[in-house]
Length: 328
Image (cartoon, rainbow, N blue to C red; front, top):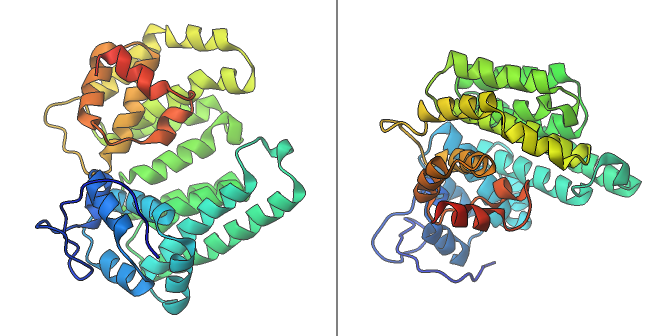
């Protein structure tokens, strides 16, 4: 099976195919659109995908987002065949579990719970349960990997399991990586008011994480929390005026700016290839509060590497408006 997507590629995948002169690593996908275009052009069966995944070198955070990307880009049939053919391969089960999560949310749709039909709910729960089984097995086979535990947080949210279960998954993830951002971000979502938590609980997590690990990428949790709090009255109370009032608060703007300046905004900040997604979150916040200087800085660092989901929470065309505001 293959894909045809326009783009120029200058990468080599060792063991799969040759293009020009640079060896492709899985981590390149997170920053290099040409690498992704080349991967899409390849003809991969599950054995080739397995070999490719095995040669990848990445941090735990990069692995999480890399799995997100592959679960979207690789056909479901290929991932299913890999998992069935290699039931003791942690990577195969991890990717299949992530694929099942994606499929579950496609079945459910993005509407509020009351708008989802019984048949869709049944399919949603079935795919999440399949994901849960695969991810638990992946966690057992790769006991040092925090990634399956972060994905299980998405599962537990969809299955409406209690908060204690979600918190137990976070503890497992953080035992394997004390600053593992994906686990924190998934717990933050679970702590939001719309998912049965509260604004106070959400901010409590973001502030505690930043206090414990100052100057790290966990600073983006504050941007995430303030974006969620700002947009909540728009999405759930039909109150646009409340958004404008919130965004004008000096204490709110200063809290995020301080956290950013001490982390991603610092000259000596050490980022990884997955930091791109945090940069998008900060850029969205700086757009909302009309902070042109910091917005421009982030958009220039982001360049052409787009994370559409981040901007869609505000509405179509938001990224283009942000670029116009920043003069980028």
